[in-house]
Image (cartoon, rainbow, N blue to C red; front, top):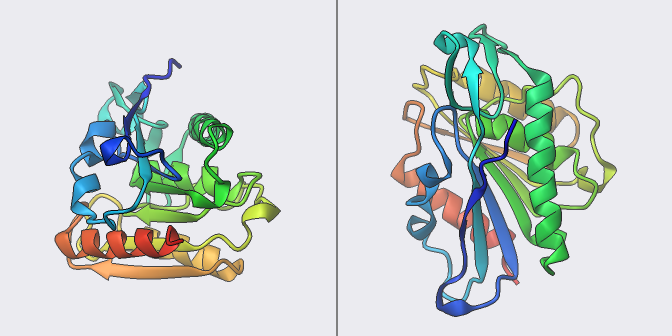
Length: 222
């Protein structure tokens, strides 16, 4: 499975980055899907945040008749709890963890690195963040589910990781029940998690963008 790279958006004005936010896209999209989100977040003018938007590899997806498309892993059944190719999901999570380590090696403190993911990308973000061996700054789970909740090896370094979970109440692709179940699982394991519901489908809405900007600003303040 070849790795197709990532879109990197550095701080304006050539300022060196002192924080990094990864955003993982959903099935059938690529890193450019969330490129318009970055300026819409309205982060403080003095924020020096690097955004990294990785592209998923192209894989055959069973639920789409085996069609090859950008995917972090194969989805085998659209059952309520989703049957996924966990080995592929783990591979994708390990790739993201490798990219996080590269940012740490470049001098960004691990607590100033945040992982965010939408739909499939959120399932990868759950796995990558909660099993990472160094403390991160936060996890943002958007319209997604915790696919590896029963198999993940939780890292002690991130047992206090702030987790923000967002979901649309009219989501026909990933039912809100799945998003809330993921939230309940991390909450029951002691993570400081917060849940927000929006009157939307499988998407991102303006109020949510504002809330994400505020959450990121709070997490990266100082």
